[in-house]
Length: 146
Image 1 (cartoon, one colour):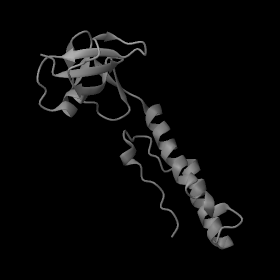
Image 2 (image 1 turned 30 degrees about the horizontal axis):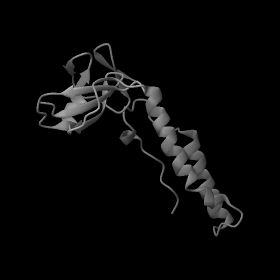
Image 3 (image 1 turned 45 degrees about the horizontal axis):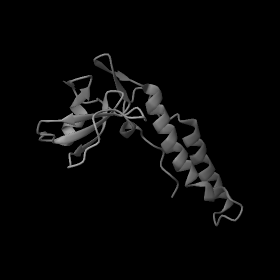
């Protein structure tokens, strides 16, 4: 009996869904995704996704230590570059939502525009990011002006 259908890319579970009466056949699809039938009951699907990978058979592992690690040759490999890309993405969003403060028709006084410009520059400089962080939740973001 097939309980679940796993959609695999680069040995990682992308999606795990309940099997139905008409399931896509097992094997590699045109888009490179591999379809694998699961014929055993899974108690906790989210945990299974985080602690298993497909390498021709199901293999178990420790969950990823953070969002910026990739499973390579039997171990988690950390990517500081991926973390910094995420930090820059959040930083860019914070700058973007304050663009209005620098427009010529902004209701802010010149002094407040300058305060906001300083905040925006602080975000651009990224000096507030500790080089030892391993997770974006560890970033202490500058406080926006009041």
